[in-house]
Image (cartoon, rainbow, N blue to C red; front, top):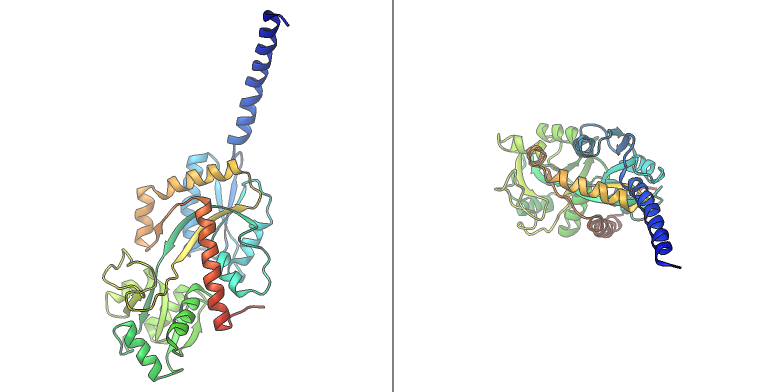
Length: 327
């Protein structure tokens, strides 16, 4: 082959590659080309819904397509999570999941309709929200040690409320019982708001609830705060000690994670992770979340997977010890 012919062949090959490469690159970077659904597996108004409805519009601005939130609740978040697990892995159906359907359900249900570790591609851990241990003012205690002493002196008399059976707060109560040997009667409600109302009315004596609801009434004396169930003090109430500081290492922040169905392309996951982490660092979003006691995080997909593994392991242990199960 002479030099002229070699150059002609080389230039033709290069031209062909130049045409093909942008097309391949375009196929990888064009996502999304139509509307994307974000399924929140709990009703409107809660933390899952809040995260989805704040991240969705910002992804819309960044990626040029609508990110529409669909609330599909039921079975402790399992129904909405199952819908995403079985959706096409094309990036057009996403899940705003979290501690309930991606960790607690595994500890509770004898048979799951999905595997949180195998049926989803993690995008990012997005946020956490601390829970506050409070008592009605009629309960004569000022700290956790006094509460434990009172509960031991009156076994089975104190009532402990949670937002629902098998909620994170219910798990927190069971962990407290296992650590201390106390016997308090669990009273589940249908959500954080009904629990909050019951605590204010004195219908239940003690309760764990997301920090935003009880804190406003702690400040007016209608409820008494004992401790934050978190590894660190809550920015909303830095004067309130953690459970660990009180001698009871209980930590069950309500956390949220962003997911796609298993098999979604790595390019799509990288794009969604990059934009989501950027969005979680935007100051106006951080400020809005902080008002609700929510701390925005933003991680790698692998970090979310590791977090899930740890959560599943520890809550499965608590559930077995408390004989908590749903057939």
